[in-house]
Length: 355
Image (tube, rainbow, N blue to C red; front, side, top):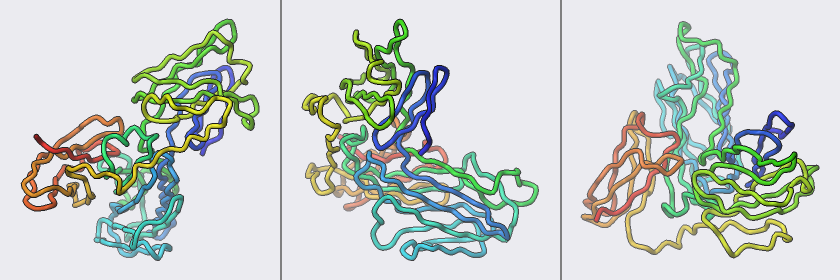
């Protein structure tokens, strides 16, 4: 997590848990970090990939089903994690899967791969060189919770990889990439009048319920008001001065949608995010069960009834549909095939019945 500071001309912002901080000035509130991939060139052709998976509160469970590194001239690999299996590898890639089950978050794993080439570059453009496949269960805070009981998808990430001498780009020996699965909340401004703060202007893609809090010392926070956001931009004002609450303010995402049964402001923010239960969905219909990288293709598996025609949708982090594939199940399962290079990053797969 980054540190927070604010003054009259600028602002750095950080999300602690579900809480986004804002001070006097403009800025962008960063979303929670889902995963961090740190790639390091160790010398003599060895590359280290350290994957840190965080306890992102928007997901009650988040399983990394596969990590794949596109890698040139691979000659060796190892891992300090006994439960992570090098499930597939070749001259130009290495795939790792956790077996059995999945570890509880947060956790950190380190993978080592060696190339016969001793030069390197940052692979930061498509096709990106690291891919994580994930299976997610949302909390009620997550705007994606209403789309599916279970969400399957993948994200591609830039990282350091070996290369011929003529392709070396002079990158540092260490590179860190931070993956966030939800879009950032954009803080447009604090609303002031005669030097007093009277509101906040922010952008969020979904109608949601927030809690505005203020502080002067970052230790003691005061609940100010619940805010119902309106997509895509919310301007909230009050005729009372907010300056008495301190110089710094934060917005806590309480829940997706406009909630009315809320605890009093005098109480601490203790509202628990409701988990979308794995076994609680008894509604009939198809479901996405997994996805698998296959060279330049992404294979999306679904469970359905025999003869059922389904539409598999690829969604971006704003829940916009970018691609669709229509398939008819011959049995109780089927596979939709997408061109991986043309999919958004990250991407989430959803399936619906075609009437």
